[in-house]
Length: 184
Image (cartoon, rainbow, N blue to C red):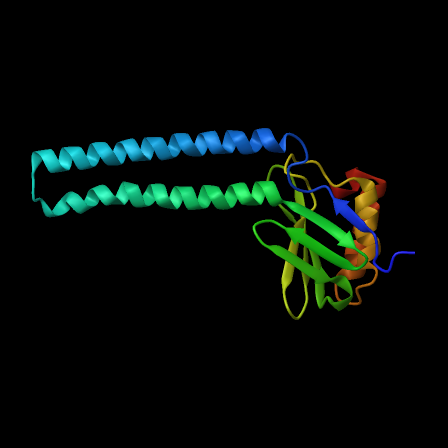
């Protein structure tokens, strides 16, 4: 017997075509950076040739700074797309995006479940302990609700929590696993 509980991977993030999504994201990012770079070059050229010594030549730096901000945000988004994952190990829930956050459900001080989104209702599980708060969206990036087996496993892990909201959330997860129309 293993000394550690088995890891149950949860189906969040991009489950299909992750590589093609990342390549498309990089191509779009490169196109935006190229457009901003060309705009910067044209603005600097026009400013310098029409009025040399003009104090407004620093305005040409603004699009360059915007391009740098664009690169940083796209890099963080790409990291989140590539790394998006979640799993259960016994009563420990780990959610990975840009950062990795782990919470022991037995030590939870509160558990809540609410719906986000206006067109497609997406359940968002929030677990708070003394040390941190972990949020888990119960749909994949493609908009598919977690499979029934994963919802039941999450409910079983929440059974170890003795805090406000845990029993209600576990019951809701079991009900949705049995019949997804319950969510509506």
